[in-house]
Length: 186
Image (cartoon, rainbow, N blue to C red):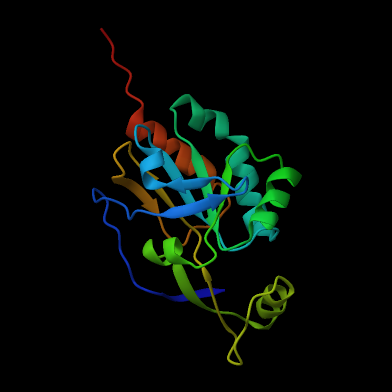
């Protein structure tokens, strides 16, 4: 699957304020940027509950989640899936963090993580099995797997765009430690 372009082409710069948002998590609680004030946070965007890559990424974040909690850094997964889909994913894989619903794509597009992809025949068949619309020329539109690390004031500290899910959660954890953990020797 080849990413052709981001739609729209929003580029949030490191050091800049991230866009505000209003999401609903898998327990029907609202989440806004202001709710994250006072601690760093990880927002990771992913295409679809239940797909192999998205499931592995969520489980990888689960497996290192205590490291995030040590630095008071919640993790939020964001996709256009339904609340019921998120509930099933969270329960089936014992996810300790919130999965948030963005059905109208406002946050996804506001963060510039919606994209157009070119697929081959086998990728198109796999994607159709998960309900993705595939055009005649084997193009699809979906969330681009991206992650944003923000500080306690909503400032972007680091971002990962169009990532491979393998090992990604550990890379985010490592960057969190570099960005927010300071050992002072006397």
